[in-house]
View 1 (tube, rainbow, N blue to C red):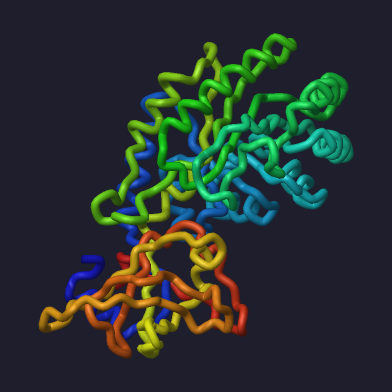
View 2: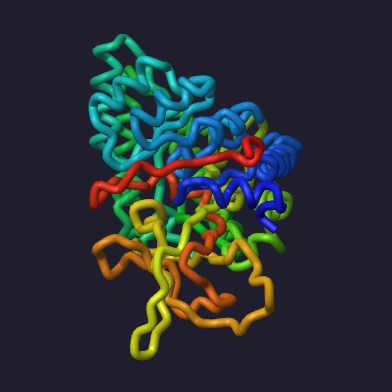
Length: 388
């Protein structure tokens, strides 16, 4: 049960929709990830884009993780919440001059650079500040992450990373740029990856690229292998914490590294997804010619993933019916004036009535952070398990 009886009474009196964060599960997840990575001397940066709720960030920072940022404001937010600058990485295919200047001003750990032109811009802006910027080159290893096309990032045709044909030119820039310090290589092949063999393939590609750069005379301190580890959206109660031990063991076993070379990761979803759930109230029930509809007070404005790329989230009724009832198949939709505003088709539930509470599970990653006020919706609310 997500809530005990006393908590459920409190929840029933709260205004919906809202995100509910299980702080105990978050703590247990972070502990598991920390222990599995630290015993191998791996460095983990939390992907802030997954969830930048203040209390979530504070909990993550307290475990010693760094921050992986994709905007200047994410850098500032991370600093504000206590992440040290020397543990902050800055990725993104379109870093603006202003964002680069922010990162340089705060002496972050490294820029993950995605084009030759970006290298040149960072060098120019660093010179204006009298700074030297640490840079890692992001390379697309052309590995199929076996996930949705919208969250695949490591193929040759993706917009991310420096194309292989430009790497020799990137090395030439590094050789002459006085305000750049090359620290290593960066890879990120996609998100919600559940086939761990994909990461084995990544290791083999990283080994090849590492050797190529070292043959060119470049010293590599950092091997950043990105993130992408998926979670179990189908069975969140059975698998609330991913197998971090097995995940990190793959890199320990297959990634070749020399003495003093650091291995860095950028995990987001795997750290926060299962600890967040979205609680909603049923506004109306409606039957069409062949469909039963549940119309909720939560919409794509609060959880965009299903509308954006048909992502699956388990949906449950919070209260059991007093008498066991026949299970009914529902299309579960929201109130937004868009046909894509739907959370599930043919979802089998006990009979649901107006006013019943439903919960959309595993919404702690890419949920609250992607919320909007489209249709002039109210800003999303959130509560924490230790406050109810």
